[in-house]
Image (spheres, rainbow, N blue to C red):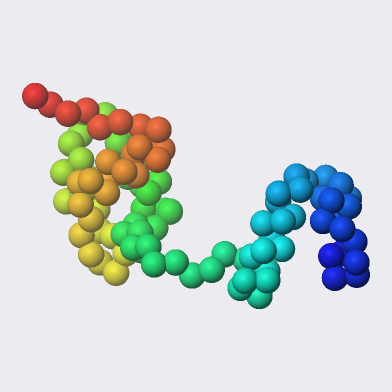
Length: 102
């Protein structure tokens, strides 16, 4: 729509989105030649979504189970071991919490 001469405001009104959304997409398109997400330099996740669900399921079966034991029994992507902190992170993403014994 922008390439045929419509204004940013008219495109936003037509698509029922905020004006800043159209401006942001137009700026991204001009800068990168695409509106899609670009590659990033973040560390890859050590677990798959299926393994994340498995970790949550194991925790729901035994809520007093320590994260270190779950981590020791769970194999990550490419048969690498995952850390207890990774287990805690996956449970936090699922709105679950590890019980810490004193």
